[in-house]
Length: 269
Image 1 (cartoon, rainbow, N blue to C red):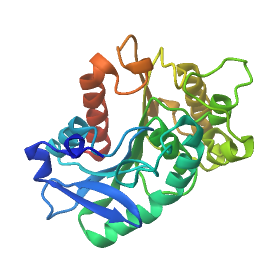
Image 2 (cartoon, rainbow, N blue to C red):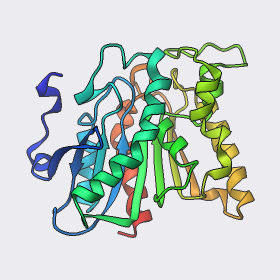
Image 3 (cartoon, rainbow, N blue to C red):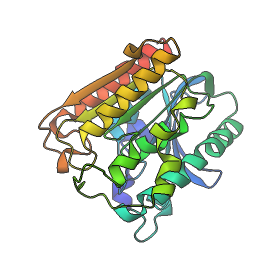
């Protein structure tokens, strides 16, 4: 990887350490490296890498929130030829889901006492968001979550029954997809505050799929006697981002501020 792509602003670099957590390359940002801080476990999207989104980590840092950013399998420091292709996305997400817990446990072991176990969030963009939503279907320690440009309705994304071809999305084995399809495992999804950001014209992960998933999840929350209103859906239009998918283009600043404000509220800061 071109080292200039991973060069961090001085203010961020001063608060950042890189580590390997249970085999997963991680970028860890902490406000002071001395006292417990609330933390976001973050996973980037396909074709990206953990250092890409400096603005996200800087905003959290200024609010006293730590970040543990993980490289997806085959990406960033562990890049593999072809691993960032659409045909590999199900394998990548599957592996990432299984790596979250060991990586977090190793972070807590290596940096004992620096992450507030009662205020941990998880989140991700695109493929990272898919891993996030699937992880939330099983018992977990997170108090809230944030996802962008993703969906928990993966069977319909990868093997659509409506006849619509999804741009940049390859078909995958239905059995493999079902294992990481959050909509197929909602019974275990604990009702926690969830913020969802999406672009209406997303050509990679159609908004209609995430809208439908949010509806299903809202129904599930109500079955647990929890208001569906704790799911926040924020949408954008005509962002100018490639394929209207990643980063929210001209609304990128607003999207990052929206996420930061959400976490500040949830962490009681």
